[in-house]
Image 1 (cartoon, one colour):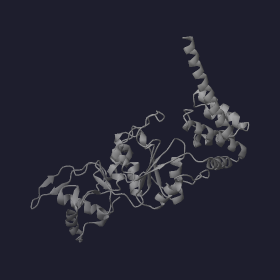
Image 2 (image 1 turned 90 degrees about the vertical axis):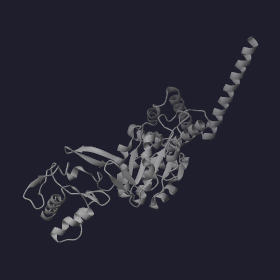
Image 3 (image 1 turned 120 degrees about the vertical axis):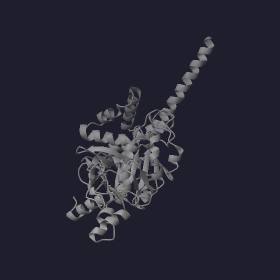
Image 4 (image 1 turned 180 degrees about the vertical axis):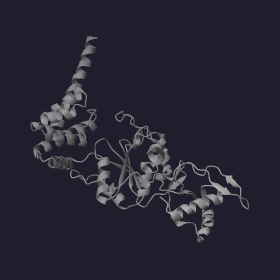
Length: 403
């Protein structure tokens, strides 16, 4: 609310110039009546009133009003056009985020891979965009979250989809308390707060993501809908995660991923290739998960990580089409703490796969549970493949003899 002197200034300025948007020089001229040769500081230092370079809105409360002023040297009154169409509050909502948005440290998290480099980028407080690519469930997002938690850095996460557009990212007009107001999008929020902006699953985006081009160059962005130029605060940075490198998914494993514009990808100076953690790291993660839930089972964790290791090696050799991610191992340990049954936990957490894959995974775990090691299992699989190939060749040879 304006105090009495401020209200008098607004009234005088309206009568003097007959409009609600004034330049700095006009504000100075209006302020001379009150014995001041400068523009009112309470107005020009409030960014809510600024609408352009050296141009400000007079803060008028209420609906559009007609202002009556007296023409010079006459007693006649002149009716001016409405000087303000909306309330000041409807013009611009500075921020929708309140309080601390620094992520919390996760007691389960164990650092590995590119984490030290990622942490160095975040702690540098410099604008240096990072692209992180890797298979699903290997801790890409978790690494960013925990690096920000360790650096005490604010993080704003945006999950990208094919429908994400400029309105979702930069902001748009929203209905609030019966009024149409401008609402900052997550990108503008991160820029003004000097926070880290996490574009999660960015390879699902359409070409509408190109609205971020100037932002990815480290410069500000002009938000045309509100006629305002936003400069990034110190510490602002952009990190993107994706299952692909922005070139689509030829094997069809990541349905919905798109080929991203080359100019967009070029705005990221470095790309981190995130792989699944080693067996020893995964053991720490799973043991931490159990510990956080008041349980401990080192033998079960050893068998789970061995089982996952065999499946991954087979996957990368082209032997199976599915893989057990670190996230799924965590899900299994969590299910175990709920149901108290190891095989039930494994079966329930592998039900998402087709029947053949699920049955083969469960059967493989029974072998691991019986004491088989990685080398023995891989050797048995190789022998099975050789035997199957030999039988196929013999069958073809037999068919030729019959013919």
